[in-house]
Amino acid sequence: MWFRNLLPYRLDGSWTMSAGDFEKKLASRTLQPCTGLTAQTQGWVSPRGDDQPLVYGQGRELLFAFGTETKLLPASVVRDATKARAAQTEKRLGFRPGKKQLREIKEQVHAELLPKAFAKRSATRAWINPEAGWLVVDSASAKRGDELTTLLRDTLGECPFFPLDTAQSPMSCMTAWLSKGDGPGRFDLDQDCEMKSGGDDPAAVRFARHGLEGDDVRRHVKDGKSVTKLGLVWNDRVRLVLADPGVVRRVRFEMIEQDRVENEPQGDADERFDADFALMSGELTKLLGDLLEALGGAAAR
Image (cartoon, rainbow, N blue to C red; front, side):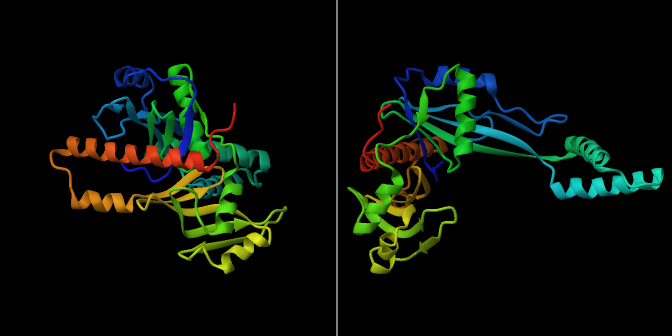
């Protein structure tokens, strides 16, 4: 349940939908199996596993999940089958198939194999906090975020969320923080960093598990490189990597999880889930608020 990536969106206006009403909306677009020649399907799934509601609500906060089912048909399998079919055709006709005929054979092979291919399902959780104005997707992929918000728009008839756009560029802010050797507010520099120079063929340098306060790191900034990824520690409780243009990756609740282990919530699985969600959402709400402030606030729309 603990998010490992934060792809943030801002709420445009107000959100008044209850968990029950949201559940009814999502139920109209649940994930369906791939059938026939369908290579992929998308829909809503439970954020807690099979036979669970599509929406988990705690107060006004909502947890839901975007699911995909994809047929696994490796290109190498199609290529080998196409070669074998082309060899059979050459033997029967007495001459090698041309490019057009090879393309037609490949399409025919693909259509025959696709219904027999194995299907793989995946789920991406998302969390809505109406009071703080956030939709957060547990993904570092802008494409996955676009897919989720597109389906949300199709399901609700609108999508009152827009990608986070900050007043200051995350790249310029990270470069400034690294240059002075200190993070903003409750953020401290961690031990991971990636920098790139400008131009069509940019030079890149990456530091991993390396102190970032030294001159050996900062000289790259003086040489004109900009920071594209920066490891940060928030409030001595959460480790993360901030990546341009504002995606939070590799979130690690190390100190929080240590406290959780030492003070393991009592009760059944539902009660423990309630406690974990309350802890995670509370910490992430504060973290995202601090991050937004560090980046100069939201850009004017």
